[in-house]
Length: 196
Ligand SMILES: Cc1cc2nc3c(=O)[nH]c(=O)nc-3n(C[C@H](O)[C@H](O)[C@H](O)COP(=O)(O)O)c2cc1C
Image (tube, rainbow, N blue to C red; front, side, top):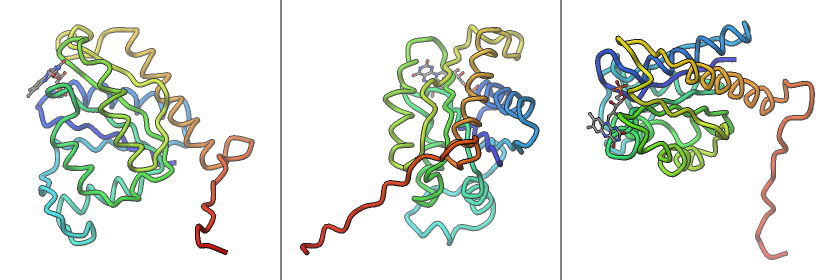
């Protein structure tokens, strides 16, 4: 399984990148068959979405779209900017094809200056994954500046939550793929609405 971590921060020494990297490390330690990769938006120079077809982007934008599309599951992290995720992450969501996250498991991480915006996970982050027909892990992880010291993520309770998030994202992805020893989630087929 390919588990992609996405960091929506463009900062140097990003706290979000630290948190998402820790979650990826925990996923890999728990299950050696999980192939992890970090997509930090600060390492790429992305075009702004201008409405062209996703197939028509080139360069870094092409690479990033392809990485998201090729993933089996994702852990998405973003700093809180003005009570929501960053504009850079929104641009990524605008660039990827509509089905890039369809049916995939998604874990959510947010970092904020204080605890004030922890509910942004529920009312800002989660809805975009419904748009993409993805399945979010019920508990996201909110990290604030007080959980970091000297450029490290030091709070043990956050590491515990990231371990749970990593494990839950992998378990949900396995369930969705029917690899968990039981049936996968049922596919609900649409009936034709044409008059018979
Ligand atoms: C433009 C901007 C807007 C921000 N808005 C908020 C906010 O609304 N709520 C909050 O808790 N923190 C806010 N912050 C603080 C960042 O979310 C916080 O420092 C975060 O940990 C930065 O993550 P990074 O190091 O990965 O970039 C803001 C920071 C910036 C630069």
